[in-house]
Length: 57
Image (cartoon, rainbow, N blue to C red; front, side, top):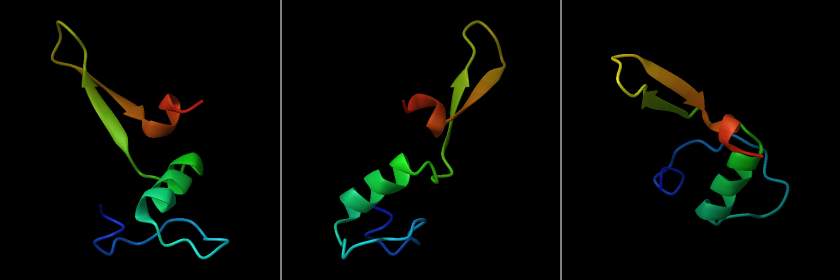
């Protein structure tokens, strides 16, 4: 949605790709997205930050 709304593309496109979903998937695979998931530790007031690339194999 952000790409479609004009957000900058974080990778070099090697072909004429215009589909924002495909571009987002390529950015995810390239591990360039600045996304961190914040998870609360159960039973505590502390939290754990999990970079999105930890979730990719």
